[in-house]
Length: 83
Image 1 (tube, rainbow, N blue to C red):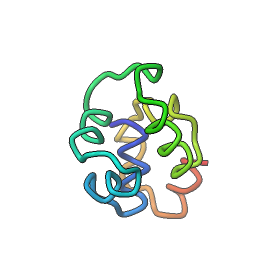
Image 2 (cartoon, rainbow, N blue to C red; image 1 turned 90 degrees about the horizontal axis):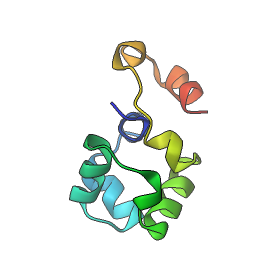
Image 3 (tube, rainbow, N blue to C red; image 1 turned 60 degrees about the vertical axis):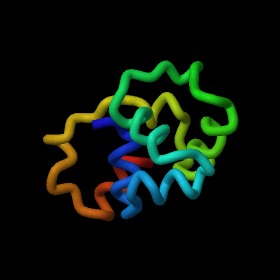
Image 4 (cartoon, rainbow, N blue to C red; image 1 turned 30 degrees about the vertical axis):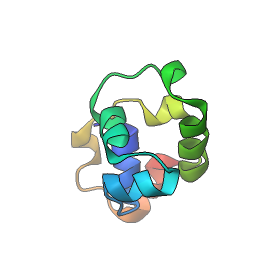
């Protein structure tokens, strides 16, 4: 799982919800979460929107995180992981 998906889920958002907030399609969000993506290939407007919304660099958001380490993470703990 990428940090982007974890961060989105922590905020209780669906891919469609996030897509609306950053003014892109759900399919773009899905691709960012599921496919290998070079951060330099992400459109600058989308990059800025995601970084502003989550308060993290895009490189961090596109990093794979171990789901086993995140399972059972409570909301307060999840916020700490994202910080």
